[in-house]
Length: 78
Image 1: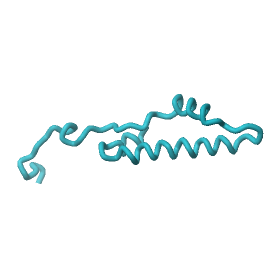
Image 2: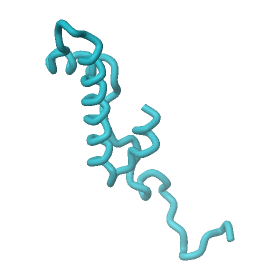
Image 3: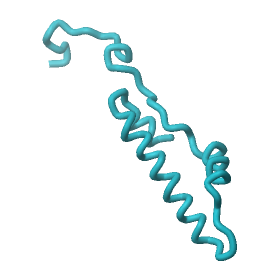
Image 4: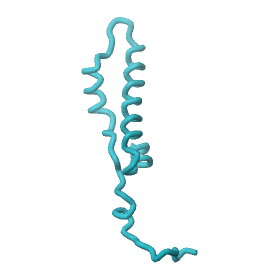
């Protein structure tokens, strides 16, 4: 969840979903290596993901909605 909260800005949604899918793919590959008899099906994998991983989502609003502050050209902090 920390990754999504840090990188979950409005224009980064494609990278967020790509990261989530890559984590799922690597986790599936690691689970498949554990057993020599059966493989983890994608159906079971989707159930595990739904139960264990948070959804890939945008956590922040656009900056004007988030801060609600408009300056007059110069910052007060200078």
